[in-house]
Image (cartoon, rainbow, N blue to C red; front, side):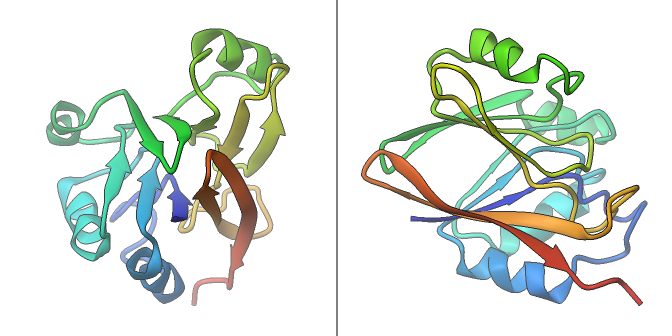
Length: 167
């Protein structure tokens, strides 16, 4: 099962549209996981229209409508992989132990907020992934997203993708 991990799309405040490469990846993915900060309902509708299956949460910049529609934490079991999604996990220091304590029943936690790509494994095996942002790179050299494969209870082929600069 092909997963697409995105977060912090910030449409239309930080970008007017999603990069064409990302839209194509949304269409190709079996499941799109979005870790919040869509900003408005139109951004959610755009991604939902192209996704086969969408798992998402609200973030701190989302409209009241999205905060009512989407949970703070989402959970899915995909091909035997226990996945959680949340927007914010707090400071980088101590993140692994905090998240392992908060989410002891997960194999993977996808998060956002910082726009900084992150890939670590906590003691006990919880994998933490932040795909960065495909539209607002902030202090990062590239806008980014991630892909992965879930099969037979394992997460494999985790890849961070860099997007070309916007024109």
